[in-house]
Length: 198
Image (cartoon, rainbow, N blue to C red; front, top):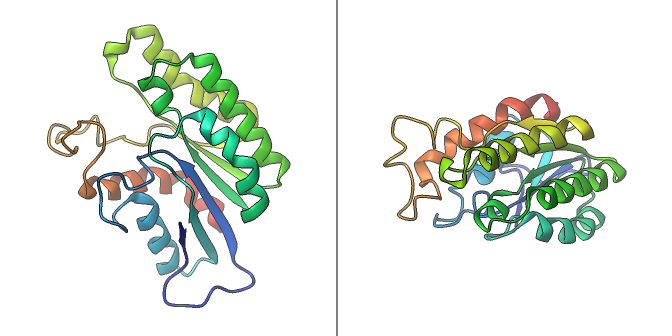
């Protein structure tokens, strides 16, 4: 899904911002245009920044799926900036953390080789997965960002999953935030992303 800047024609000088994520970025359970990626595209347009947002997120996507899809996306879209929001489904399926980390590292290398900048979006899992798994999962995003020179959003759901209204801000499955939470998700990303858009 391509989300062009609104209110003006796409110019030849526009750069592409590619988002590769899972259901948290693919508007799962939301109406079209309510998710944080769509909100980001509107904010970029409102600030008259010359970027076109391409949302290549798929609900249920794992880091392995993202790794396999990324080369074609990079070749087709030729992004100047890539946001990778993957890994949560790996954890939900109990996949080895070493595999998740290797996939994210491979994706980071591919983005770098394509000449694009990278933002990695971190996630956390509930404590019922066990303390070590929980801590190691949270840490792997920072480790990949550091080793690859990528920018890091520490936790996409900061202020949502751990906020005062956490019990009511999620959809019925307890995993996917409601539409009203997505402005917070965008704010978490924007703090890191904004300097890269200038």
